[in-house]
Length: 321
Image 1 (spheres, rainbow, N blue to C red):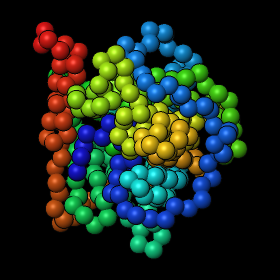
Image 2: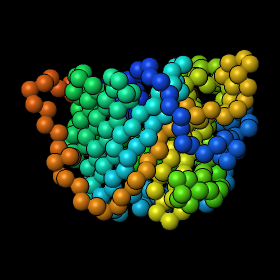
Image 3: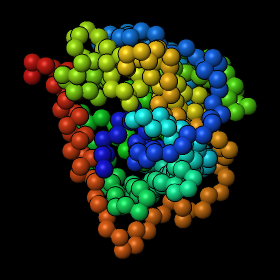
């Protein structure tokens, strides 16, 4: 199992085991109602020197609000179109305030006849990961936190949804720049729609050094990105509660000849029937593995973090200084 999981591969959170299922009609807003996607086919590697805009401020408020609720519960609707497969899923997201990180339970089921199931439980000590009846994996979060405290170059953790929705938004804060928000209505809720565009240097970190998208040293060629890699994200945050009701990883650049330039959703996660501070059974945040084999992925995750840090340092100082 891959514990790298940068924010761009949120599909691995919600459909990562790649099964073929029918794609049902969605209830997403029509394309004409969505904010315009980026139109440039390139992104300059120097980035922008502009100060944080209102979109960034709203995202920061959303991160802060998520940590203030005693509990959060929501139903999840998932849609994806990856690797030539269209999929639909549904699940539940639960969160309970705790220190240093929230307790989280995230479950997802894909398909109707023979559903494929994904379960993540963060109990404060371990992140447990189970896909169908396959091997049970876990990451020791205490070891990860200790390693990050002693390594100033280690990037923030983004282990699946182990850190909850706040961790997902924090990862987006690290990787993307944010447009000015547009006022819309989604699921009868007034929301701020914000287009999130890659920070070019962060995008370069997620690609091999010799990738065609990086052929020009002064800009990233978005049209050369892998087919399943989004070039922007569209997020809906409630205007009153700042809750992330929709996160849509999208592609606006044609990756194949003749495909046109219409923006396409790659992975979409919607949250609805959201409740704040309602009682949640504490047992739901406890995972009892029983007698099944446990695969410890802690060292694998930390090794990848070290490789990421080394890659970032080399690209920052290509001469080794």
